[in-house]
Image (cartoon, rainbow, N blue to C red; front, side):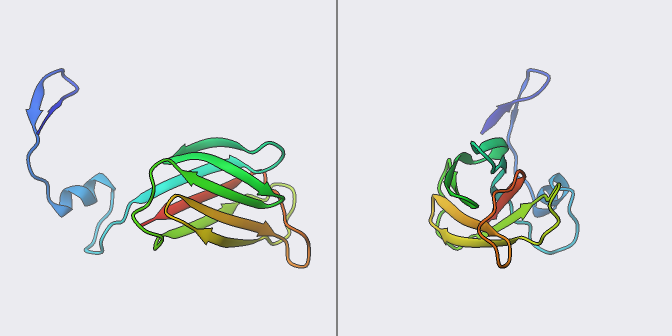
Length: 130
């Protein structure tokens, strides 16, 4: 019920309003705000490497273009939205991103080119909302 402030003094936590939360997230209007529950930016080529993340413990490279994002803290259920994006730096072909499976602790995806085999991307980003 108390916290240490930047000036090294303690303050009591008081109540907050929805407008306080909207202000914190730089949002306006009456629509609700939903937080991103996990996110990751990783290199999916060669040895998979996480560049930056939040609530992601690791990435599993299952096969070419097939990855599993492992959450540090599990979701409450499997009814979350997973968004995948990639950055095509040298190849301008279209890529299809498919969410294969979602569990409370993982989301698995496949990246592929239409009419071609699966594709490893150097820049993959995943965001999970619930």
